[in-house]
Amino acid sequence: MDPALIAALRAAQARAAGPDAVPHCARCGAALMLCACEGVEHGRDVVFVLDGPALPEDASAEQRMERWLEHAQLHPTMMFDCRRFLDDMRARGILQAFSRLLPRLEAMAAHYCRDDTAGGYLNERGAAYSKEQLRGEVLLAVRRFARFDWCWLTTFDMALVNNCYQASDPAHFPLEDPDLKLGFDVLGCLQQVYKFVSDRLSYCFEPFEWQ
Ligand SMILES: [Zn+2]
Image (cartoon, rainbow, N blue to C red; front, side, top):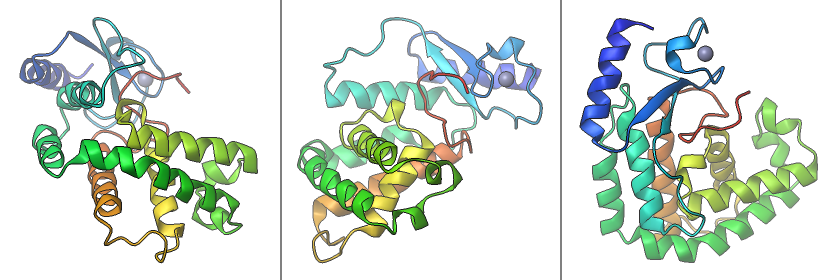
């Protein structure tokens, strides 16, 4: 591994001051020291395996956000103040707003999947899905988003949530609505955040099944 990257990872770990974390390659799944992938940009496509227990199923929204922050702060290429972002969103009432937002996003998702134009919003990966698979993926994406399961939210999930917004009827889902607007702003920020760490559609912060 590139010595500059080792130094950057150590510095990021010291800043995060959270549990110990072992960096893995998001492409092949190998510990970064053993990864032989070529063409990976400095510090990108890294996934951290955190020491200590996984987040419990019944973790609160706060715990989920803090876990996401722990991950975000470990990335040496992250150029976004994720702690400040969370503080700003808390000040805008994200916890209450997102519990109200979930059923509305689910309704948006149902509309998006029913609509035959959905294919027009999908990229290559999504276009290969059957209607049933697409429905499952879109529902999972909006639920991960609104329930703060952001560590599991992939770049592809975010694109699907964005598609739901784009395809929604503004008469039913006006963007001036405070909860819908907050959701859209948060989505935009999260998409920016992930651009710093990976371009892969399957990328998320928690270790996932390697592809
Ligand atoms: Zn690799």
